[in-house]
Length: 278
Image 1 (cartoon, rainbow, N blue to C red):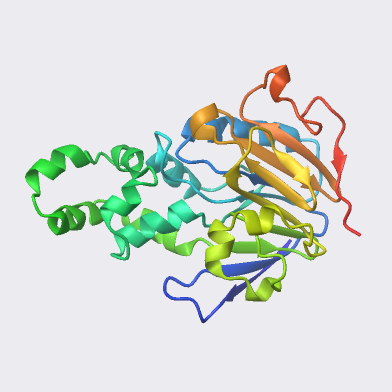
Image 2: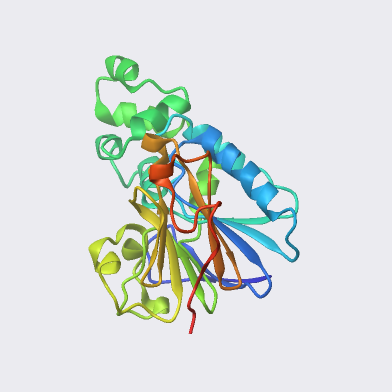
């Protein structure tokens, strides 16, 4: 597997890389929005390792972003992703809009109140920060923000800065939210890659690649119209989802067993689904 790194110069700081992947012969496991669900991440990784045990060739885990906010253990998730991936795997972590918002707060581009609307209270709690208590001590918002900003481990801040915004091969695009279909891949705006909604989800005019994404919550993983959506809102449902892509075959994996009403056509007890890449 070969990875080519590019930085696009017209973006404001921090500039985020876009990776070109050579996935010939590689089995890819993409993981949806984690949102501080550390236990579910560990459970899903164990299932991925078991699933991959009999498969030959390179193996790659691609995390689609949103590691923080809403769930209870953002700090533990980031710390885990800073460690080496499971033995026999490579791992790429992409940026999500929540990760960018956290960095924007830390680096002074976003106020604490704005970040809090995204579910930052649980992120801060995972770092031992009680905003309500500190608010009684620091009467001025600027003082409170300054204290909180210096409370994060530098390695975690560096991790947030380092996250690429896109990874793609000749047949696949991995991205947090999606792409704007009418725009060439090299010209996609970072805000779209992180936050696009209907302009991507409702379009039938996608390029000749499958787009694997999170960001938009779904009750079941979606596979249609060259889109694979795997954000199953783990912080609310307790279900973290991955999709395994091997050549043109795909299969979904979950952090725990699902009841019959949550089964999907490509769930583990059904035949693999196939990607039409022509």
